[in-house]
Image: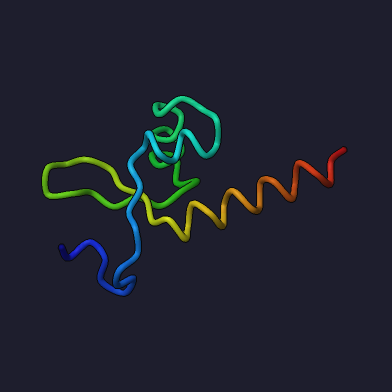
Length: 70
């Protein structure tokens, strides 16, 4: 699959998997991708996939922000 060029062997997550990590609805993840908050890759079938490393980085940033706002 050519979607992983530059990120050889990196897992690509579905919107549902990303949504579970952030505890949001999968449609929210799709909106984030459309708004440019998170990068996505399109499969040949037109489905969105998200790089695991990018998702984990965003999750860490948001978790850090949340803990600093307490």
